[in-house]
Length: 297
Image 1 (cartoon, rainbow, N blue to C red):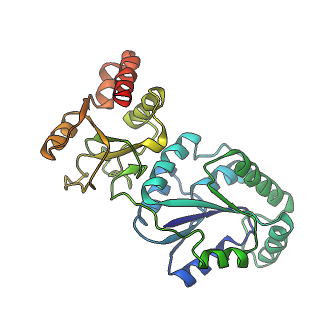
Image 2 (cartoon, rainbow, N blue to C red):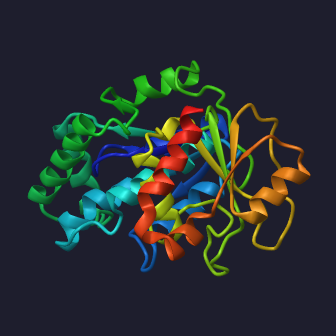
Image 3 (cartoon, one colour):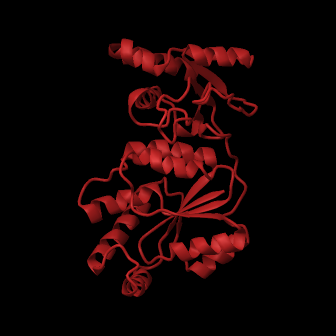
């Protein structure tokens, strides 16, 4: 299991993460301010590196959606569209996001202590209040925060010791993106950006053919919990390992069709979204209709 800890400054996330590391042998990663470049790829590469392991990550993608506007006075560089794709990877690797929200006064007291040691990002209480309020608003409005903890750290750790939250989860093999309980598996070709740290994650993006496919899938009525993605080959053409599947397989493009034939799978065939987007962009409705037929067949 991978636990992503989010929450306001002073909540005690780092202390909690260290306890998980020390008590349960979790791998530990602390994420600082975001780097330049594509944040979806950056955060995705970090999360994927822990696939199949017990790990605790002290802040990751969602923190940028809070701190970007508050600390930098600009829109978050990690958009809602990025979050949709990132959640596909969370499902594939068995990650949960745990939002730690102790009472505000507890956060403020801990923040003051750390501020005196110059261990905080900002030095005014009003910013802390805004950060706390924003996390509280997100927790209330965004169902993707699957677990919100408002109890003390000791109580939480005792619950973790008893296995309340740490449960075995199904993890998809490397390269897969999407839900382990999917009904439909979409097979692409292979990664197209050699220098991307997530080049072997299938359709892991919001632009180009990945963004086009996501749009068409949603228009065709597919739900995120019922879809998964894999490429026919890795960037270096290594064979991709697939589990035994009870999914409807949709081959997108000729390379995917060939791979499905070699595996002796029953499958549906559709043109690759990059081909359709390039040569039939005015016929997007037709592509959506074809996807909907597969879903309803």
